[in-house]
Length: 557
Image (tube, rainbow, N blue to C red):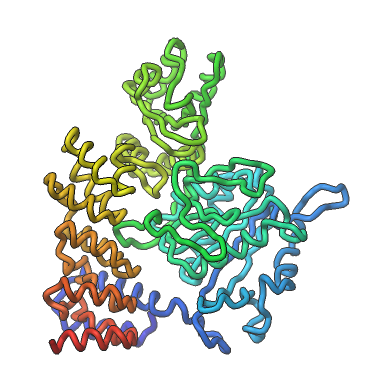
């Protein structure tokens, strides 16, 4: 915020009798507002349309390799950006000739022009050499440049790409911008290369889509980073998300599956946790494994264990030595989580071979991937302010959409909007209705919401949290989400901690359809926030011509 804006803000604050906490809220809001309003303005000469800025972090991997004198693939430092700059598919030199440090994607038609820079690591790494320190470096770079770019692309080798994307999803806290992780099976310089499509698609998504997640872009699919696994070391379709649908598919057009995107209900400042506990081991159960193998994974220095069990969470129940070792580790405070060795599906205490470890305190993580379980445990164990019970509770909680925490049947019925199935489930277990209504709202299932209300469901979240969700929905232009809340009986004029309502946010973000919808469902269109501003004043500040006209007409009627 510059001095003149701060002075104006302090004048406005002086006109209100508000306390120090409210002043801090005002300043935080003003900074956030100005950032949102200026995101697309680079202040570079020669720009005639909206642009977005993307930072590409090139860590290494096959995508930038060439054959060396020994006939094997190896990265060549300092080569990637110059060669990309010479390729007309990656750079339009006519758009900003006076700004040579930028690369510019060719025109995407009506979309924003995507400007990007490449930060190359030294040394460039084969992904097999990636470690926690490299995750920390990537996270730190994103943190350092977070305010300067609209999105980020991480170029990475494929072997450990799923580990890195999972780790970043936890380390980047309250992420509000897209972070795309990609690579290739064939170097980008070769005539036939998947790297070209993967890189361009990543830049487009990072620069033009509102997806506040760490994602993997590969072979025309956009996958949630912490749901991704490498499934093939030779095919171009190298990655999959076995237990969660793609966030988008990329054919002739990019088809975004909006309902599957993970958007946090609260808007909090972005932050980074750089520490990741290294005292985490993997214990993969195998037939006839020795006691030494078991003991090694459960050694005294270990603080967390990812137990990879057979099938739906089973281990050999006739191995007393294994059960004794697990029980002893839990007794000394080791957190042990259970995930399946299978590519898809969940663990559950449905069999005798799994019930005993469940009862002794092994945490069953449903449909989480091994990579996500490993990195999440490392992340949670680094939260030194949390108690041991807090950490266990957080492992069971879906922090970034990494696991499905609801009843499998209820979750499936809810997402599909299958009212008949829902009715049967609710008759059998009416206690789930309050948690189920949150799920139904998150997937905009109006009929399911109505059914749950009939069975006595109520939103139990505090009004302030609901207000934050309403504002977030309005900011991203989601009429469907607001309709879902309205169906659930929510007052759409609830103010958040800064006094803003959904109508304020719709006016600020020029969401015409949301404004039109809200005008039919709020009583006071001149509700003022903590700064004394009405939705119309937000629209005026943002020069949202159509919204200004609609609000003025509504005020006269």
